[in-house]
Image (cartoon, rainbow, N blue to C red; front, side):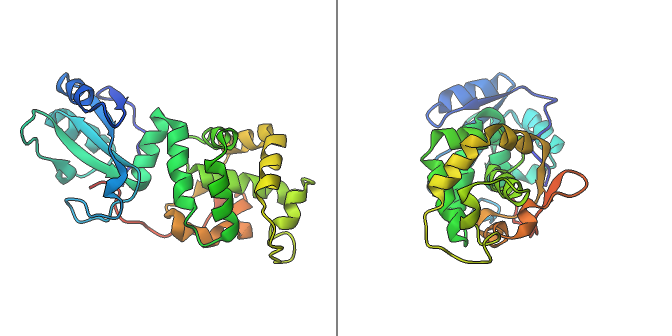
Length: 252
């Protein structure tokens, strides 16, 4: 599956959930409308049989225009849904691909969707921190500086872990099992995590821009790897290598 990065071709424009008419009008004029769909499709199956996960987007356009857009991103033509009563066709986009696309238009909203997924991870530490980030505009804004196509939770957590492993002195270190001998102290790590992030904001922002994570794994599946030292181990190419598992298609 291709990424959401190519910029050449038809002009794209983002539309919120209730801007359906505006999105269709833009598409009828020859543009590509990226329309935010409602999340009540969570867990249902797409027209092509894939289980769909948040966020949900409709990519709308005239069929020839949409076919060009899809081909540039490695999306098979059969993903294009029929026009029905309108002149425009659409592609149902969800999951990781939708997150990458959404990040180009609304980085904070994309980061929010990513951290919502991380609240369901198997690690209590990262599930709690993810829930806390969702309630904290400053932390969300920091995470949203991650480049489009890179998962904000993975990068933020890896950057913090990396700085701690490099010797950054802070009370947060004693709450990480990978740094305290594997102990669960039963304390809420969120206040210390927030303080660490804000104190080291510039370093974290630099790491978010400089590093990437090598994973195509869903948030729940990635959960068990996040607390491992591998999360914060940079490779020679500037990546944080994280064990991966191929996910299902994210285009319906």
